[in-house]
Length: 272
Image 1 (cartoon, rainbow, N blue to C red):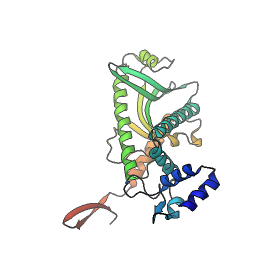
Image 2: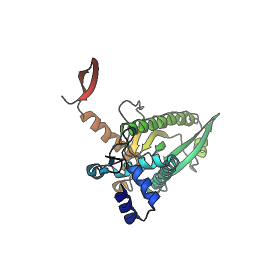
Image 3: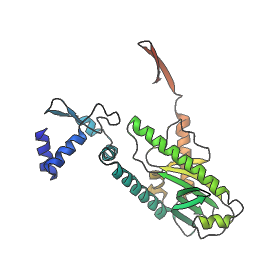
Image 4: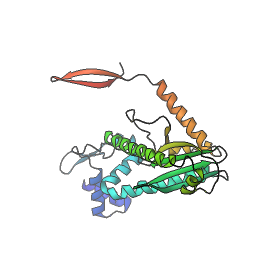
């Protein structure tokens, strides 16, 4: 352990306490079920000896592992990071898709009675008469069971936010001008076709989530692919939905195997 701390100090310029803290952060803790060897590849063997699990370093999602460890060290810092990440993605969407006929508004507040909320992304295409209203969840893509659970929870929260926004939008069915004004859009026109969506990063939810047919869950990184520059965001979302639907239809039906252990019966996923 001392040798590793000294090596880290020489290579990084960290102080001895900082280097020790870094080693502790990367040391595997079998009592912490939220972090795996991919997050913490240093395994204590004795009081003064540790093993470095090199395959865990080589084959891990290092971005995800880094952000996960950052959340452990500073939960507030992780929240600030995801908030900044969201602003960056939404600003990029605005830069890519805004044209004289396509109006993009980010982080627009709304209120209906006592209910207050935010519309993370509003896109109005005046030529098509289409309006997109989306909620963003820019979490770090999950790489543990616990991360998947948390990301699913975030997506479900976004779906709930979409339904609240839908109720707010629908109240303007007979007054499109007022709706555009409330959305911060300096445009005129009839009541548009409204498309609702949830915007994520690297994970669009598990099968058990109940996603309405008219709500698209889309990876922000897909929307920002260079090949879509100059395209309509509505066309890109339609293409993404089609690809996800085709992939879902091509998957083999899920199967389960039954295992009896110590008088208990378990159902586990099976390919047989």
